[in-house]
Image (cartoon, rainbow, N blue to C red; front, side, top):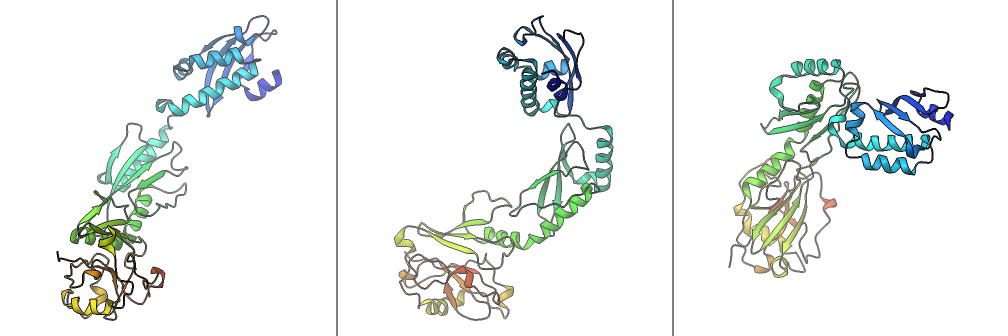
Amino acid sequence: MESSLVKDNPLLLPLNKEKTIYDGFITVQERDFRLRILLPPDRQVKQARLHCCWQLKHLLHGYEHIVKQRQQQSPDLVTFILELKTVLEVGLKSRHECRSIPPPQYYAQLISEMETLGWGKLLFIDTEFRTLRLKAEDSSRRQHILNIKLKSKHPVEAPECSADLPVPLAITWTPQSTLEQLHSQFLLLLESLTEFWDVLDEIDSKTWILEPEKPSRSDTMRRIAIGNNTSIKVEVDPRHPKMLPECCLLGAEHGTRTPASCTTSGMFWRSNSRHLPPTKNLASVWSVGYVTPIVLKMRSLIRCAMTLAAASHFTRPVFTSGCERSPPAGRASTLFSESVLTAASLLR
């Protein structure tokens, strides 16, 4: 038992030959706590008295009954010390104020990096100088926030970063990295998503959005109202926002039913193409967000999600309830700029 006690707790040593008095330190999560243990002559742990430093006493506040229980159940001192350290680990994880304080170099490094980055980009910093919020602006003047949680060994350890994005925030970090470099990586990621947000902003400005009620920059889905208790759900790929999105009609069965054969789509296009903007380069005009209400003369063709091939005057259904000839979205040609054209009947 003695060899195991010394091995696990090399800073806790006996002070007498009887080994009834132990004094020193126990180490938990790289923190040392002063502890003195007084055992009775028979060395029964149940009757032992504990004296500790104020930090350890403060940490064990609220856990006294657990420590007492572990003391009564432990057959020897080695087992009790192990149980005590387990309780301390739980206390350290649950108490924010018991976290280790970074060295002075940490604060000097942080201030130096913020001066290089610019204090104007700092939106928030907590009292422990661990959590930061940096603002960023993309080329379309949209405002974004980068949340950073620094480790106590910054910059050796990589910080935890998060942001309101539709894709994972992958950050490259080395011990030589700085907050300025981190912010630059974030800006590059924002620029790669500019076209995606342009598409969604266009949808939001030109359609009646049912869901989400308050879209965030990480949302890739929009449910658009197209009349008569019917809506269309559009899922846009953040990496390929101009490609054919996933579409699904939602609503009552009588409102979303389409004919078994969709051979009339050409007639549908010819009779309603006058509603589309004149242009020689359709690829430069059409986007996912272009939605035009079209007055249909056939109730059976109400509300179809259509794709427009930019190089030809033909349309084909993407996903319409009851349509047998709807091609899978994966067959969309990359040679064409395709978009969703939502047709809504304005007839009663």
